[in-house]
Length: 91
Image (spheres, rainbow, N blue to C red):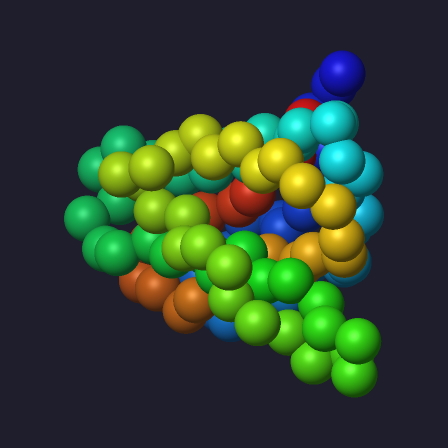
């Protein structure tokens, strides 16, 4: 499966569109950033609750990149503001 951009490159707080995971069909998230970024890069991977609020399930950083999600539900990724530009892809 070809990678799709969830969050475009930037430095500001940004949310992806919602994406759906189905049981038995894991998806992998990949960070795109400069290796010399020198500033913390964090993406909160958030599960959508029944009341349409979001709860952070895991934090994606360069230390645990790439990250494979396996489960079911509706999710989004939220980039935290940083001096380093980054983007997020999913396959």
